Length: 69
Image 1 (tube, rainbow, N blue to C red):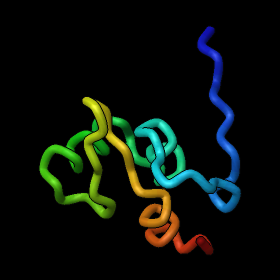
Image 2 (cartoon, rainbow, N blue to C red; image 1 turned 30 degrees about the vertical axis):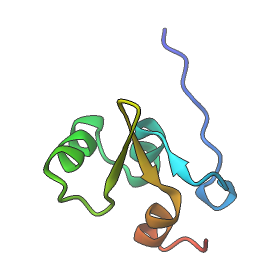
Image 3 (cartoon, helix red, strand yellow; image 1 turned 90 degrees about the vertical axis):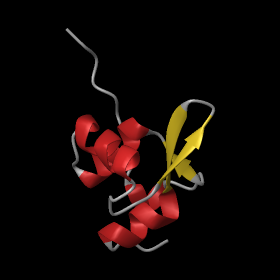
Image 4 (cartoon, rainbow, N blue to C red; image 1 turned 90 degrees about the horizontal axis):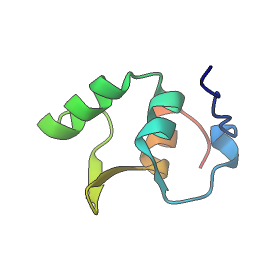
């Protein structure tokens, strides 16, 4: 059985960028939806391409969800 990843509360996250898995966990989006938003550049948070991977601004995600930064 696959091991579930534990994510800290978003209020405690201090790093500048979230991974796609973290972004999907906090925003409750499926990975396919996040990738579609990144590809079409039309999602609530704009993805940043970092060495072939996607990064999502922690500040923007907190703003989107109404969490104090």
